Length: 281
Image (cartoon, rainbow, N blue to C red; front, side, top):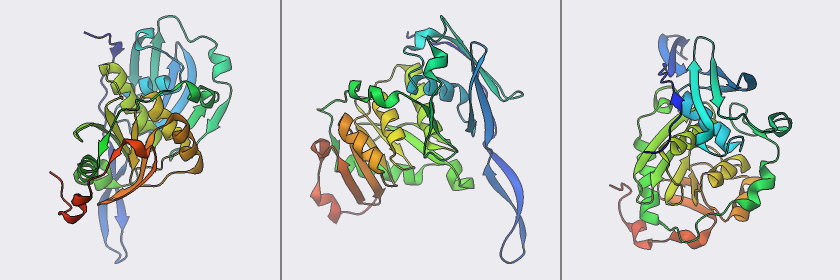
C-alpha cells in the first residue's frame, strides 16, 4: 500500500442560493458557486490564499504544493488539515521546505480565472520535463471524452461560473472530475488526487474547460500528461511551452470539431467517424 499523509475530510456545500429578478420582474431563487478563501499554512508559515469552491481542499493543497515544486515527494508531507471555520489548511511536513523564502519570493499572477499564481522559476524547469513519445489518442476516444464532459453532472450546469477538469484513461473513461472557480485550482486538485493514489499521467488524457495557457501546459507536463484538451483555445505562451515539452494540445473541442495545434504525431485520425452520428457510446 502506498504512503498517504494524514488527511481531514471536509465536505462543504458548493453552491449558495440567492434571490434574483429576471427581465419580466419575476423573482426566483438561483444557485451560484460558493467561492471561499482557503489560506495555506506550511509548518505554521502562511504561504498563500486560494479562492476555491472547496470541492476537494486537501487534494487542492497537495496538488498546489506538487505543481509549484515546493515538495518533491508525498512522503515529505505528514498531514493536511482543513478547518473551514478558519478558512485555513495546515500542512505539516517531515523536514520543512528548503529555502522556502527564496523559492516563494517571486510570484507570477497568471491569466487563470480566480487569479492564478505561480512562483517564479518554474519555467526554468520546463527543459527537465519529458513526456511519453509513444502515447496515442484515437479520434473516437477524443469524441468519447468530449461527449462525456458534455453530459457530466456538474456545478456549472446548475450554477455556471466555474471551470472543470477531468482525468481520463487512454480509452476515454472518466476517472476524476473536479470543478472550481479557477481552472488552476481544478487541475491542482486532480494533481493532488493522482499523487495520493500514485497514478501516472503517462497513459492518461487531461481535459479542461478553460484556456490552454502556459500555466495549464506546465501543470499538465508536471503531471506527466501527453495530452491536454479543451473546449476553449490556446495562448501563444501555452503553444510555445507545449512545443517545448512535446505535449499534444487539442483546442476548440466541441462536437466533432477540434484543432490539433501541437504534437500531431500522437493523434490517430479516423476519417469515417465524420459520417457517423455525433453520439459516442
